[in-house]
Image (cartoon, rainbow, N blue to C red):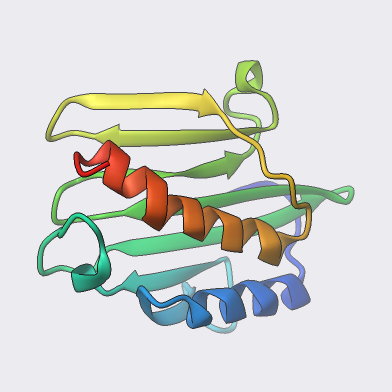
Length: 147
């Protein structure tokens, strides 16, 4: 974590609400704590992930910042059972891919990649809903062998 810019507490409250409503997520907390609030960390029920992942709860970290009104964010899934991780990042790390990219790393099979990505929506909560749908319905099943 560690995006540039400032946070907006109302944006974080909306993002937290989205995470708490998603059926695969069991708990949501601010990290490192509710005072500092650098990012949100959601714990995921491993029995609800397709394909099955293992006993440890995967996590989803969501960080959202603004620089002169321009959003920077990371929506990143990590599974300690398999080492697989992936997510959407809007940052300056891969300018050749445009403002938003999707990246994944699957160390068990030795695959990793970065690709251009986009969201039609512009409101943070709508972007997060879309990312969650894509993550659990498309990306995890496809990239981990069940798609």
